[in-house]
Image (cartoon, rainbow over all chains, first blue to last red):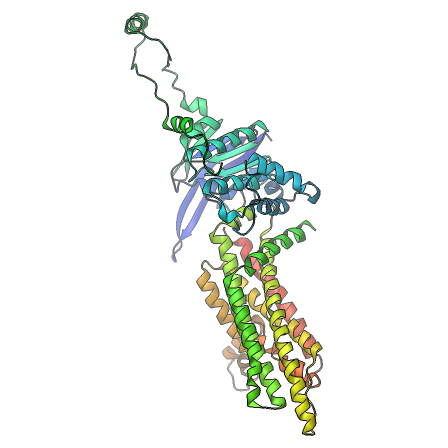
Length: 283
Length: 276
């Protein structure tokens, strides 16, 4: 079994109201998420992403279809032992310190007492939260909450990590830091399922994506494959004089190519922001 | 073993969260102040009856505030986890639904234990102090001096802890399947009241001219809702241990324990089917 997550013909209906009217949240979804890849699950709000993830984590029962994680039934404790999860907009016990929270989660995830200290230190380090680990969670900023959430998700060294909107409400610097953490985890051979509205980041970090709309998967595949336009090419040139541009146009047109547009490349606002702002207060 | 360990850690964090709540501090301080202030009733000069009055007053406060705490805190701590989605984080780990629910219950029950122990401590101190004064007066008047049985108070504290555990378990059973905190609190209060009024159902059951429907309902009520009234033996246990029917405390302990286990098993069954 090469898939980290295998979802087959998954359907989920919710009963709404007293009369129990059926609302189909997930409609015959099938996904195969290969091991060792970063997989982006995209879609507008209410398209069924979170419900699909909850079913994969055994938190919600499917109406029909099957879900397995790393070869085990998704609802089994064995599957959850090998999975880490960061929910959307995570909220944790405010009175615990970051270190106590991660230790608590490590204990619940079955980390042995003898390995506890090292596992917690490693997770805090990965999430860049070591410096603030002894502060109460109630004093954390949104970005720090996401990062401590990431630490609790990876403390038991899971093979699969599911991140639901890990950058929601986080500034671009914090968001880029989380993107780097995702890349680090991929480098460690983990499989990551990422739900995010930050399409730029998804494009940068994901190997494969699936786009959902109204409960159905409308597109899935490798990022390069689904985004590349095979009938178009981009030449990036520096030091182009008007004479050279005219000569290039003539040469291309005489070879049968059609020039659709010539423009100056722009930096993204995110890149500009990250160049100017090197760190937030809580970094 | 791992299951017990996880349940213990959830209970521990629940306990820490619960003792930080203002409701706990407020009811604990108010209860202790009221139990302590019962010493002011000495001006009534009841003689031995004064101790019974003080004991009844203290035990009443303990049950009233304890029940309030058990119902509100149980519902609040469960719904806080569900509404804030910390339950999502925990249940996505290899934590069973039953472990989670039992951890919540044990954390609340431990807080109730602290509440009962502190209030019994205050009430015991008040009773012992006043008993020595009343005893001197009784001896001077040639009457039998009153006694306060510390062992009886300990048994009473244990029974009260069990009673509040039953109230918490009843509330947890309701909350495990309900969608709102308010419904859980109201339903928990009503079921607690039902447990306190068990004698009505018992009377109906023993009534010769009651119809089959009435008797069936009464029979169901006496089985489904634990009899919380059987724990009203505090004053006798503390002031007149010889007057307590033999085996009454043990019977209350046994039936309470069985009811508690049954309620928790049903609550876990309901919660296991819940979609988080």
